[in-house]
Image (cartoon, rainbow, N blue to C red; front, side, top):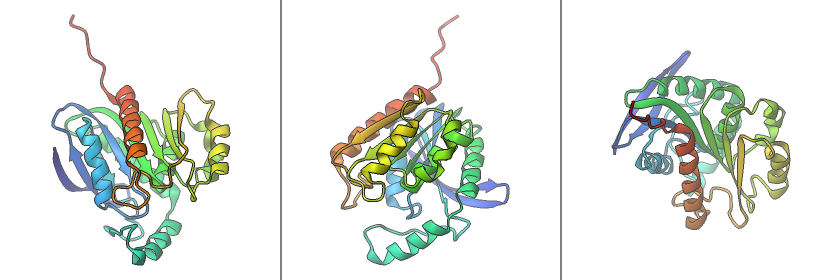
Length: 239
């Protein structure tokens, strides 16, 4: 695996990103969209997971407009207030535009096969939902996406393959909200929902108190299978 830090040129600025490359190409590409903590070690670990599964994985600095390259940690009590402040300043519409431009870049990246998916955690989970509603992304996976319900009016435009991991012991996205989202989108043929009854919010966040290895591993394998289904180039039969 090879990794590097790059700058992504957007229509109205420049955004930092961390990229992990698989050993084999050509490969599909995945945008790994952060929680509220920045491009920290957890997000880099997620990028490595998907690179090891055979994908180019790019982690964008989603909050670059608020303040670029800020890295915070959930386990540091002093980081909670600045993280929440950035969270509630964030403009979802501008963020969705940035992610669409990032998707367009990855469609032409060296070593890619032209297919692009996304995976998002917490805030990033909602971004994945919005991308499936607003863009032609090949597929997206959301882990315990926060405030998807605030954009449930866009569900009629949810046209791209979408996988949602719901933590049913989640205090940020409580069971009633999980059920509401399931009722609104769960019967769509392009939507898959997996439920984790005993999992807390951020059950896949490496190193956190909320981390749960059994649920995290199950979700990762389901996510990789989903990406394999939608992002791997078809094997051409010999003429």
